[in-house]
Length: 77
Length: 87
Length: 111
Image 1 (cartoon, rainbow over the protein chains, first blue to last red):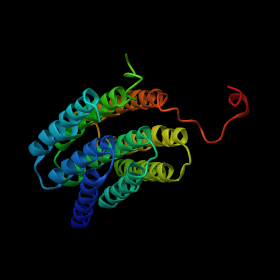
Image 2: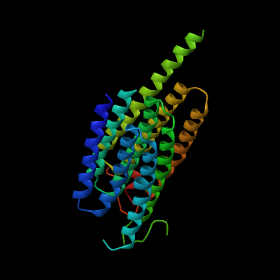
Image 3: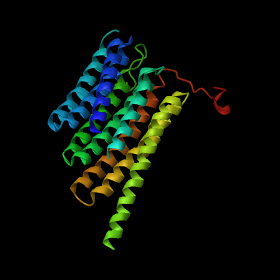
Image 4: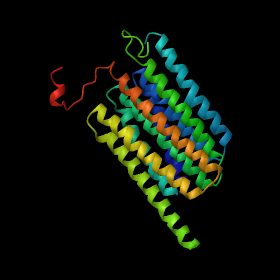
């Protein structure tokens, strides 16, 4: 049963990554980035690594998105 | 417990349809907020399944950063000729 | 007597968790099927918070009195304060995009 949830999360991760790469507008890509981060956090928790999950929650789901959003606002897109 | 986790993950996958096909940017931000809260509940339920209560700390930290994400996106994703929302 | 209280607690846990699953699934269905931005925001605010509070209350009843349930109560208070602020900020941000509701009420149509 936990293998089914793990495979489902892996498929969801691939769908999110393809949407981030192949969309036209750049703001849609930045909005899909925290979803990618939180799926990766849940995968790390299932693989019994809470410290890596905590670092992933801070970096990928928190700081990187904020930096990308402020950078897009400063430049002309 | 695992059936509940499976149901919440399926709900998050259904909500991701609105991120793909939202007509505008605020639709996508609201759907992203919903997906974040759903996976936060998945983290809390997984801590009860694995019998390791340290996983709740991951959920607390993720809640703080989800709030910061939504605030920053709503402040800086405005139209370029109108300026920011908060200014 | 102790056995009766234990079985009642188990029943309460099941009721809370199934209620939470129902509200979260109705959140996903509302995000897909509603026709308008503001109705989708309504589904993302109220149904989501009802599901989250129900699931976390089920976890508190399953845990009992302790340090972990204190953490879960802090998480409930944080979610209740945070998600309402986030939905309000998104709704005031949507004013820049000129999104009109699809079904206009009579009193709003003369603006």
